[in-house]
Image 1 (cartoon, rainbow, N blue to C red):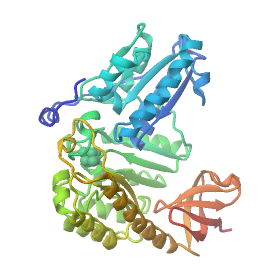
Image 2: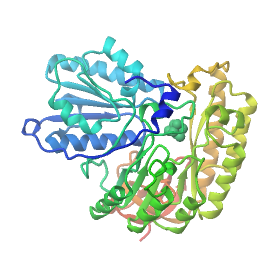
Image 3: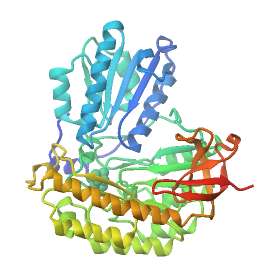
Image 4: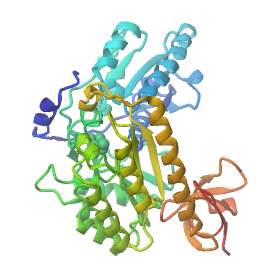
Length: 468
Ligand code: SF4
């Protein structure tokens, strides 16, 4: 349960991983009972919530869309940013009042925050109205925990050793057209600002045969697109000598014939030529890559423990652009890492100007307790960081708009996945290059890949009309 220091965590990466196959079964006690789940954070958490929902539905629970109607409320939490903590405890505070009206209501907290010792200490001291806390390594045990819940606070947080659990196709997937597939868990990169290696544990790859079976099963059910998920997908297979590499896995998934394949996230370090070749070779592997830069300064990249230089990043970027026709590349950038100087920041701007990304997720650095970077002195005032972020965003958004304008009057393939939030008479979907498009079309086309002529381009989305 303790947040291990880096040395202990690195030792743990050598531990053996077991593959455990589980099969949750229906229990009459839960039939008709209702659950509400709220998810914070990244795609990994979204997909974990699909797994939690599937487990609960398999044993008899039904999902509800309001916490007011629920018998159990689950918060699947994120530890990446400080403000997530306040949101979670704000929501829990409101749920505490619900318990007064509904004494049998159970409150459950899980996800990355549950793996943080400081959070568990806080819960034990101040939030004992929570019924169950469980971590990221034992999601599959939720049915057992519910069965054996004793009165008061139950804490079921495992240390970070981690195994690979296969629960079969029991996910409650949010979409009927696109699906997340975990290909691996955890991360061994230990970037100095990142909490993930501590909350998600060491890298553990699923067996390729289990992943391929899942892809086949989704294809049979009519899914059009799968996204292979991992904190660092290009490390796939490296923890298991008998497993194939990520490039080989991509090739095998492409051979299943599923219409669209995506993957997130890939680290620029160890992004092999073979991966680039495979993406270029198979038309059903989408020409879109999210390639986190984080900083353009070699000094800051070294302090971050990112394992590449500015020059290496740009060389990789150019190689990808040259080899994969029409590829779109987006990135992540952290502004205001401890003691980032004006010169360091200008190096980041220089990379942005050279790469002209299709989009970027930009953040002000937020220290996470237990990580090496949180112990670094930082003399840069917040106002300076905010000004840098503002300037960066303006530049990034201009490049997004410039790239999006390239699509004007062109016809592109769009997978329509839902109703547009701004205008319910339109559908929205994504191009092969992951551009969001709001489309005027017949709603019967939902779930189809259609030809769309682009009529307008903004920084964050395109508008279009279906071609007859
Ligand atoms: S590679 Fe990504 S998940 Fe892993 S430590 Fe670095 S930032 Fe965190």
